[in-house]
Length: 143
Image (cartoon, rainbow, N blue to C red; front, side, top):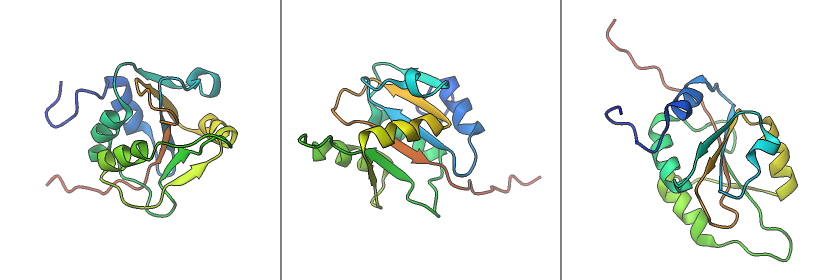
């Protein structure tokens, strides 16, 4: 364990977040998402809600300032979204900006191009979210 880092974040997830560059995307999926079908880099976070993962990731992860940095899966025609899911994710991220809604099969295509997919223990329907990484600020460590 490390001080200041959420215990919900595994060493593999921390490594993946550190490896990502500006514009790379990471999918935090619900427990039903076929992550292994769409991406070869899959991290399991069974039993951990997506909101808990998002709250642990966001202090370490700069969202892209040049594009819409957050996307979620849209409801299939004839189905509905539970607005509480988006509200829960916004609160975990401390994010009030635009969220792009992506049609299901387009979301799958985007997941194929993502840097990684984290399959969470989230059970909420349409509980899938994509984060686009921005430029991480440089900190002067007083060389």
